[in-house]
Length: 185
Length: 191
Image (cartoon, rainbow over all chains, first blue to last red; front, side, top):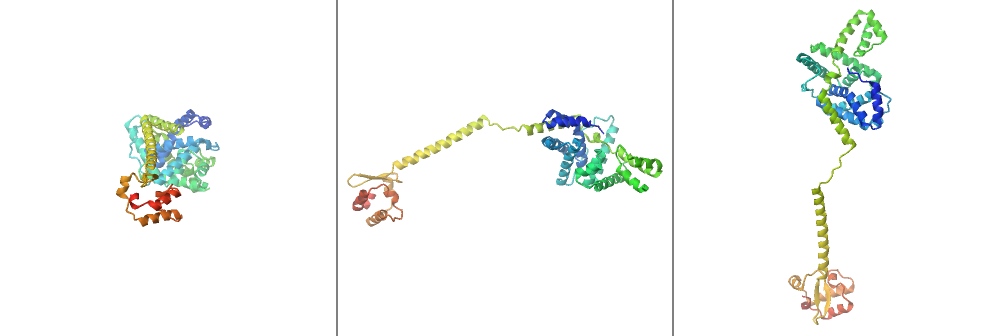
């Protein structure tokens, strides 16, 4: 997972709050991939994910003055992106998972690698789709975003115990899903 | 804690870079839980990361540009400027509206001034009568009235209790003129 320098983000956020567009553009560059990944895994649709990513950053820019710095900026951004993804999923049913129309992946060297990565991506999207929305969100925030259960509880407005239960069930479903599909990572 | 409870805690530690010391200590001592953790960890290793779902370089740039454009649009909303053609059309509309209004006013004023002039038998001009274009036209359209009806009209007007049907015709006449009409006006004079 690509590490983002948190202190650098904080400095950029301080500048962006003074309406420094260059600083905000740098934030977009640093965090764009994680927002695309989050919205892609949540919705299962790449085009939707790109739209939601744009909406997320536009909202962040417009409401940056309301970010008080009590939580990490990344968490605040994930909250915006998650809300947008959930709003989308609540209005558009059922979700349609991409049929792998992604552009060629330039980060892999051989067709075999490409095939493997595509398969893995489809497997993960298929698994995420199986999860109820709250479990999907909890798994996304905990496993991929490495947030603490306390942060997730605060962000989602759920009890700490509920968040832990959601994550536990999601992990056990991942294990069962992977075993049933012959997906042995 | 039992092994079952430890395993529930291990599930919560799934995918995290660090593990609570108590859990790590138990794993060193318990082969069953260690096997459980190793099996679970394989799924974490193969579930991919953000790079697996991130846009490639070209797509990133495209998305970046899209976001920048949208931010520009929000910051500087484009004011639509009117083209020369629109200005010309607007000016023509204004001129046309003003022209029609002026012509209408002047036409109304002319109609008021060119009312029929009633001429008494003696040739004396009495008063303009509004609403009739000319004597010839009125001859064609005015309904026939008998002497008694004309007298009733005049009485109606002079008594102040009139029904209003004749007021426009007799507006502006002096008492002397009214008396004259009462005494001398006939159906033929009116027509």
